[in-house]
Amino acid sequence: MKKIFVSLLFAIPAVASAQSVFTVETEGKKYSFPLENTVITVTDEQPSQLIEAPAYKHNLEEVNLFGSLTSFGFKPMTLVADYVWGIKIMPESKKTFKFQAKTNTNADLYFGPVDANQNIAQSGSAIKGSTNIFNIEEGYEQNEVLLLFDERTNNYSFMGLAKAAVYETVDFEGEYWNALIDPNQGTGKLLYGESGMGYEEDNGVYEWTDATTSLHSKLNGSDGSWAYWCGGVAVSNYHCDIANGSPTTQLSLPTGTAAHSGNNFVVAYGYNDGGWDSCPVIDFKDGVARKIKGLWVTNNSYFLNSLSNGDSYNSSATDATFIDVTFEGFDAAGLSQGKVKCRLQDGKTSVTDWKYVDLSSLGAVNSLKINYEFSDDQKNSYGFSAPAYVAIDDVQIYK
Image (cartoon, rainbow, N blue to C red; front, side):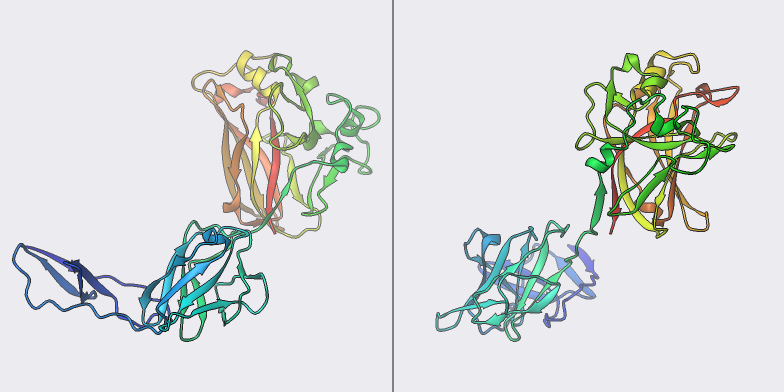
């Protein structure tokens, strides 16, 4: 003999009035017992005094879903409580449905919205006799939800239906962004001013702003000079072989590595290793804090060449090497809201494909500072010695 103590708490929708029960079906009959605080004894003995499960009350003989959601077939709903019918569906975008029922006289009834193609809500009303359809909008993230229909009130409700948060993607594509690509990626006038030695005043300094999200970045300044070597985020569409990766090809992705989408991307340069702070900053031009969902990153040709082969500033990677790019969020007062890391170099293995970085844990931020954490072999007497570049594309910002 086995004893099983069942203590379950069920979340019953407001339209469902029946008590939760444990139901056993045998020889074509159902038997039910209340669930809460019930001891269920399982034996090999012949059961006695079984109670046949009560049928739920209903006036309609059947209720079905009909529409493009069901491939225009009639998909039966199940009586789940007194006068309440239920069915599990996938809330696929741009799919439609209405309710179809059979009365006890076998007559057809349809229930739909007042207006044609009315979008669904978590709960709402269907009108008897309406042949209009309910429409499922884009943006629902669930794979399956429970749809309930109360035949007494003609109301419907979804259990667990919620939309995914809507976000905009800054992809750096279009004429505005194309004009921000310096014709000379190594010493161009956009990134280094007319003289090639930096802008001498904070006037006309290289910067960009996304018109939709207000995402913004501007070259850093140091000692009265503004230039990419002071730290910044530059728009690019350059490529070169890894073997040619160098300061003169600093905005290049490896040949064969496309932008994450479209043709353009940005390359952030700069770092703070406790000495000179040249960390590139991305903020919002209008000063309004926003939540950044995430972005995509990869390594440029200069970084990959240096870590593979070494250069005059840096040694090649060993099994002990690591380099993480960090994204730290700040509020309007300059207080840190947290930091997210992404590994770009793990031992002798470099990231060569686009890698997603989830920044949603930072919450709403006013600015994002990019920096690096690294192993001891990636620094010299001056500090961080690896090329402090990371390519970024498709920045996702919640509306």
